[in-house]
Length: 383
Image 1 (tube, one colour):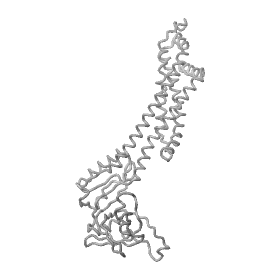
Image 2: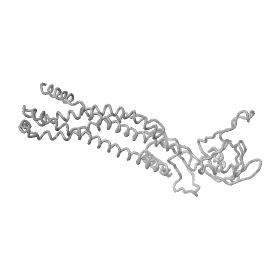
Image 3: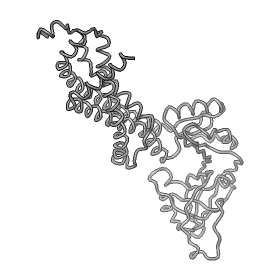
């Protein structure tokens, strides 16, 4: 007990002997902890932000018939969609079924026809531009009797809003009212989208689909694991990733994560060098104190433990203050980089504090020189 009291008394005396230099060390550690916490929080939040942004582009996993190609006409049973797992650790998957066929499209008044790709989807979403004032005596058409026309198809056929389209495929005919137009700059501009049930009647393929598209949340590795599990559950189908999304997401995240990781490592190294430079001066100033401690019977191990405790407490204080400031800094950086404030992650706080303490202890390496001091040499003025 007396040794423990003396230990804390000496440690308190160390902190009050040269406040200016200790304040500089504390500021260096706090700045390093702030930058470390901010970058680590951005690194974690970037994974969520990139995943969310890529999900806005559409499905990233598709299920197609075994050995299907672009020109094949194989189909899947519609019931297979019930085998798709929806609840995932990273969120909820959103599947949709589609049936594709080539049909003749014509406008009822003019009779001008054109062969286009017809996509029947479930769920079928459309945006109607009709207003109750324009059609006061008509109700909203059922989803099976409306369609969405691509911009290029509408231009070639000359179709107008609320016009009636006639779709023909052999002996099968269906009609629909144009609810809206779609212009994306992609393949959607060259096709007509209708409800899945309507496309099945038009193709004469009841309860059959061409593809299942799934929007799977999560990291690229989680998506790959999901694809592997789904392939085992559906041996008669082929599960494919939409590689331009999954690979693009992985590349962007790996680059951002790598840059942030290297920056964190560089900041920690620079912080350790700053602490090491300050501790070198501290070691030179404390030669006489260490010589006196060793002369009155202080063991070298206890002397070193005293200064390592000082470094650890400095790292703890700098880490606690700097990490809190860093989380606030990451919110501002998130707005500047992603346009949305980063969400503070609690796991970042103890990690940043622990890294700062390790840097502080590593920066105290010059204090090991004090272990080689001989009391006689100090008292004679030789050391």
